[in-house]
Length: 61
Image 1 (cartoon, helix red, strand yellow):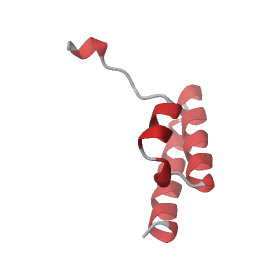
Image 2 (cartoon, rainbow, N blue to C red; image 1 turned 60 degrees about the horizontal axis):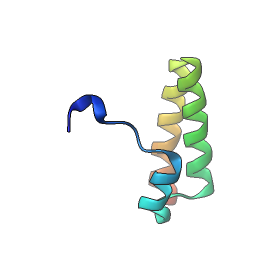
Image 3 (cartoon, one colour; image 1 turned 60 degrees about the vertical axis):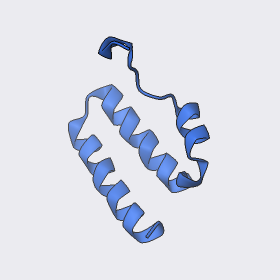
């Protein structure tokens, strides 16, 4: 398969692949990050990454 044929998985594909990895707060943070990426807001993208890391350490040890 050529590299140009690759694409990011859809939200539904990600959910189906590993539904146990998705809590409501994880999804909220991911949504904020996607929205920031759409806007090109790198600061908000970084904030979301930091929040996700903190959330993962605290809620999903």
